[in-house]
Length: 193
Image (cartoon, rainbow, N blue to C red; front, side):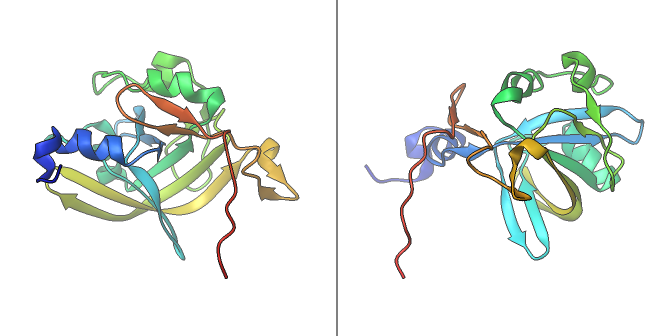
């Protein structure tokens, strides 16, 4: 069946179900009032490597939620990579809280001290990217936030010979609705010359 995106239900459902699995950017920020915020975003990915830039996109709201508002005001954030050991905590941080409440406090997650930014990160995250705002783009009712990675934290358990090892990093991907996927079922295909 062919047709405009709306012919297949809402554009959100069409896009978020077909574009899978999606990596999850678990974004931590600190407000100008000193309140720490932590929220997962499955519209997240790598944009460039020189300079190293990642992006996340809060979608579908005319009013800025805590995370994008904090980024706009402070121009910094941390991306905590979601792995199996923190997936339940990540889900807990998707609850709607008032602006004065911290997801760190609600979930009991320990804060890690960042090196180059003021915002904390999840102490138990296997990989963390400290970012400064690279660009802010408004796209319809959504925002595309680009962040330059200015510092990275990688748990020693995720390294082999000083390099991050995909066989050790058990990232989680977002599917649709309440469905997620593990990345342990892997196969290799060699690229042609």
